Length: 293
Image 1: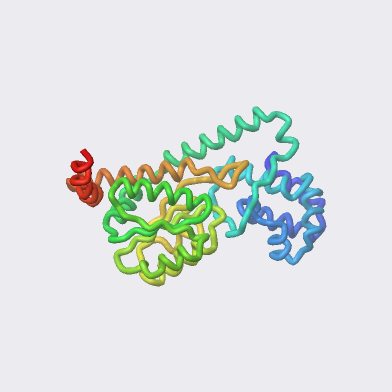
Image 2: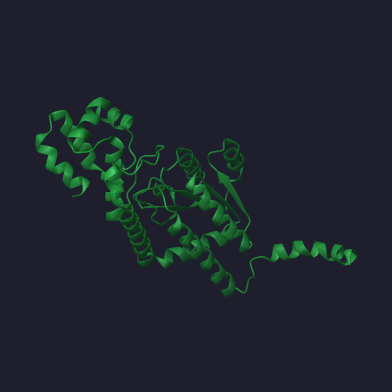
């Protein structure tokens, strides 16, 4: 029985206030994967104690166990929707899932494989090529992200560097890094914004500012319905949701590899090496090497 079915089964036995809590859960199951107890209390104007009691009546030992089941449901459904931009922690696996840990790990493995297969199957290669063209056409490229998204940015920056593209990599958790980037958001600059759950607020504000400046924006996120998507000229999506952890970055890394490959294909077709400036830089060492010998 899924968490949705379990709530629906218990629904007739709930009080009016408890039904409000259940309705909130059923309205947007994805939101429940990450919503906090305080957040739900504020949204519904219902005490946290009432919410906890509702969780118990629905058959869950704790609020964390309920959130785990919603995350499990989302992973199984491969339903990659948005969720609020809030901090979230990793809840422990419920005790009943730990009765057979090998089975649990096998289920998570299969969900990860299904997630990646769906991503590869549905990947729009025309959009990948379009993203490559946007990067090559830009005079300046700025990457931005935070947390897991910053790790993805680091890999993207490495790939672009190998292809001879200079890039400024901005960790949006650092105010100084953001302030340094603001004057560079000018015409012919491309901002590549990477925003995966928890959709960090400062990343979104930097993207919003860039949009107001008329800057071209390429977005990497988990869904076309991500809060990042409306600000972007092009959005590339790769799923990251898992049952146990907030994000898995295998699919985003593969997506970046494909974009870099598309860039190399276009550079090769144009007869460009893409790293001429690097080669020119190393000519400065030729005399030094001779002197050393």
